Image 1 (tube, one colour):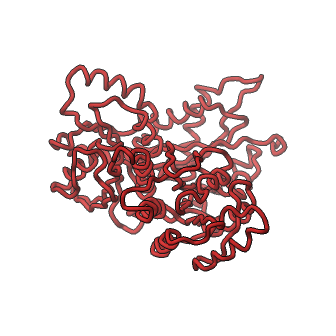
Image 2: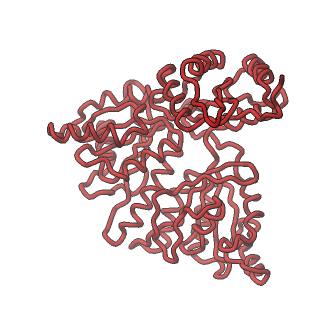
Image 3: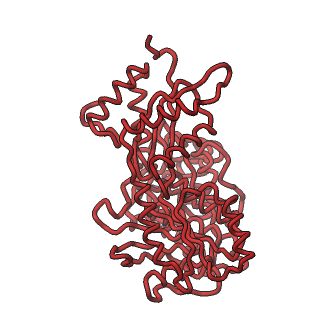
Length: 482
């Protein structure tokens, strides 16, 4: 590693001391450097897969992620629980946003495709545009090209359904789209996907651009997320002190994400309202799909996710999915329990039980009980957001971390498995936003023990309102020194 190399969150002196410790414990230095660099990269680059319906986007996504996870069905409008997946190619990891699910709305195909493509492109670092080579470029494809040009993101063009040499000529006609070389692939059979992914890696940055406002002194970005009709628009209006967003009893009346600069507690914040799409009975599936796509796009751009929960309803599977999306994206998190003023004693009792059982995965997140309608406890929202941001940016010096890890290992050693007792030898914090730790161990650490270490880290150093990522590197026997 040369002198110019980024040491993640470690300063030069700390880095040198850390490497000496690693050498003493018998770790391969390159392996240690690689582990710190990998953990320190932070959020993964995002690839949006876009194109008109039925060109094979979901099948191609399954090829890219290497497993059948995106639902594939030979009709448009097939919905899924999630729209973002993690993929790896040639040793590099990235996120894939699948825009395969959609529902044709009353405004016609062009409007539907444009809407779902726009949300995905907004969150992406690069785009994979999929065209059916057997059909050729259609008017809808041309409309997507115009969107891609406007967005100015790098684009890789996939000419899909080229199952053999005979289809290569069909692929070549797609040069006419003006997006450069069309890569002939068969998402069904896997033909050509390796070359396509090589090209995708060239288009994706090694690490994504910081989309966070404070990098250039701008306002911090807050995404208001939650299931439809939970009160996101009402909350935005209440914090803004005026009617800035249309509020309607019909769930999902907000169509476009609305970014609002709002001053609260003497600070300007950028709020992104991500309310669901308007629901009509025959559009139910497509609307739900759009809502998750837009939520994913807003969360990718935000630093803090304020998750609204409707306290008058049971905490639902949909609430849990939204929470999981925010946690997996590594954003700071605040939970706002809305409509608190509408609760009677019985509902409040059962709600507290639900919070204990259903909200366990975010028990570390600041909680505020609010009413978007009456403004109850709104003044508590900003301190909760500031607390979550502080946790998200917390950095523990390596010396202090290792003293803490030493105490843990001494007081609570890992259980003996197969006659061996793995030990945490040392560790470092490789990055912040969210905090990312690498632990170096003498053997495999079980998931339960990792959770215990995370819990103790929180007790010792705070980390309120932020997910924590812990990766473990095990010392290989051949590298051990006597």
